Length: 123
Length: 114
Image (cartoon, rainbow over all chains, first blue to last red; front, side, top):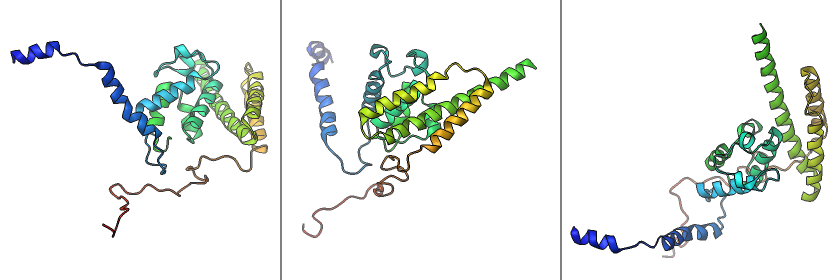
């Protein structure tokens, strides 16, 4: 036990290499093209990344303010029509067709991420 | 009494706002259907947005209702006959063409040859 503690005290886990090896399979996975529309389910991280990218590239948005739980109208100072435009941009990004009533309810990054992550055909 | 009136006013206002949002959404999608190229769409989308912004400060409820009805009539009149539909959605080019196989079923490529 004492030996184990002594050894553990002197071992440093190289955090950076771990992170690199962990992210590697994912990048290989994303370069793989699957030919069925049902095989490639998005990971949560990918959904978050792409949603934030879309919101950040909206002209009226200050990119530094965008976080995964930001509300479009309350936090980013957009109006309801901008909200409609963002949701449409998200639909195009993920090749989705969201029904009007449901699209109307999406008013924050959080809701958008949840909706897209749970959508079986988001791609 | 005034409380009831205010509640009624707010409900009607909320309904109108939702109608405007959905009208804008449909009109914007239709603009994309009509635009052959992306750079044409941006200009058209700007024009559409200006049309909506022009009546941003109208307060009278009946006038707003009339304007929304006019807008919806215009939208219906100019609706695209062959709109873009996401492939998997009903009416899309891939609708029901690529159904998900039941889980546990896989293709054996060297069947009979092993």
